[in-house]
Amino acid sequence: MQLNQDSLDCVATINNENVVSRELEGEAVILNLESGVYFGLNEVGTRIWALIPEHGSVRKVLEVMQREYEVAPQELENDLLQLIEQLQARGLVNLSQPAERK
Image 1 (cartoon, rainbow, N blue to C red):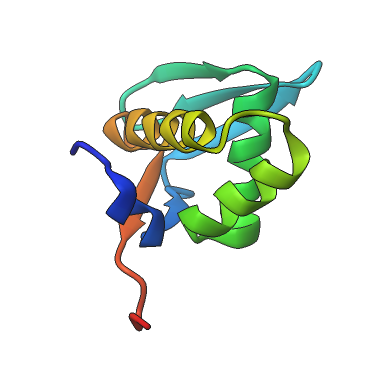
Image 2 (tube, rainbow, N blue to C red; image 1 turned 90 degrees about the vertical axis):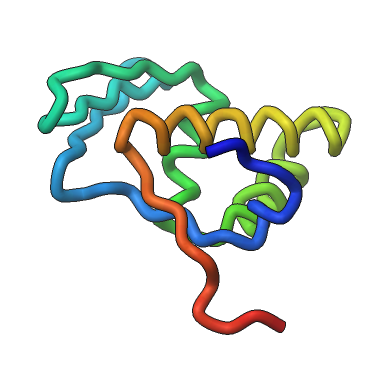
């Protein structure tokens, strides 16, 4: 699924039934128990991974990242959406529409 700017309104949840993760020296190692595939994240990706269960909304994760990192807003948005897309493709996160649209 190709994510775009509309995807910022989605809610991301970690697939807790099939996923385990550990942080090692600032980087995360994630295992999809169903497929047996490992996925590694650098420090920034690990921060995003930690923010997903904390905030859920992709847009809220983006807002926190904008406050924490000095990077062009469009670049950050593109990188965030690309990572979420990769996590979803590997069965590590689920995306859904928010319960209520404003």
